[in-house]
Image 1 (cartoon, rainbow over the protein chains, first blue to last red):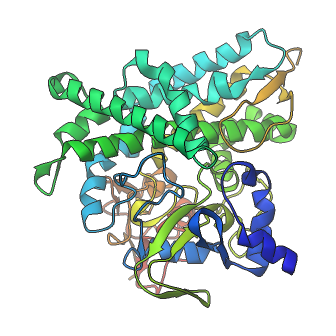
Image 2 (image 1 turned 90 degrees about the horizontal axis):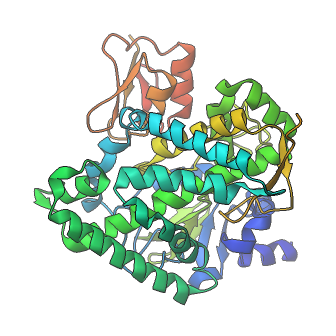
Length: 391
Length: 69
Ligand code: SF4
């Protein structure tokens, strides 16, 4: 018991800690579904699916301020819309919701197919023994798709991976590096917005949508545009790359699933949901209690931080049969990979489609593959595979 | 008579309903889900059941039953 307490007291959901986090989830769900961790200034973790769901549906008790991100994404400015509470939040969200409906996403599909195919061809054409499919496939896919949708000029794309790495992945170990990269990203958004302001009519993309949108009957301020742009950049590029990479990581280690999806691509959307449930890019998001409250018998005081551990909720045995099995044919899959409630991921339809189309082309183009060397399931780092071309 | 509907106070526009049962659900211009006209009685159909079970907000309900199963 004391052992288990020790594990939970320093529960962490970033970096190296992700290597073994699924074991933490089993312990938490089994013996301490609400507990306190001393990491990142201290927070209550909430692990049960129902408790997470309830907290997300209750923004009057749970604020997203000062930030849903713990630690922050290389900046102290509140990010729109994720760090904004009601009533201001709804207006910001409404601006972009129409750009992410299934109908809007369907219009991007031809471009997604073309891009996924040409990246899969690059993988096949690589002469390396061990092909890094994170660098050649998982990362460029969302960079290209989202950059086109957002309106980031193509010549700038080479800058993006480093900003994502430093802002998101180095923030726990090198916060100063994350802030420096954050400053670069802010400067980039500032330049982009100023350029566009002079020429709004020639574009039909997210940046333009933000520039011309009204909330509460007024246009967004320059600071609001920067904040919204900053968040979208990171949300649009990183999470989808992780999701594609994690799916490939799993398939490289599970030939049966790989074969099944290759023979029956109609299963890919279902499999994608299962990868999102079990290997999600967003394992947890933070809240702050606006008043004293009680979660599963545990008192939480006003002002205390809490972390909704989506990744644990997604493996809650009360919700899923054999929760730690990755079953690509699982039917009931109301998972928390995109969060829930008013802050649920705006880009879920886009992200899903990108993963599905990526896997379709990858599996149709690349024959039997396996890991060339050990690699963590998480993150966007290298994923080297060996392709058995004789097959 | 029981009637299928989307609880507008809960729906956040994730469009799972439309993806799983497009003949029954539709998404409005703002991005929120609703039940197509004439489809209010389709709650027993297999893919509608699947949509109910997969809606992240549990927003798809059946009026006349205490809660959607
Ligand atoms: S799945 Fe649920 S939340 Fe999403 S649009 Fe349909 S009813 Fe609304």
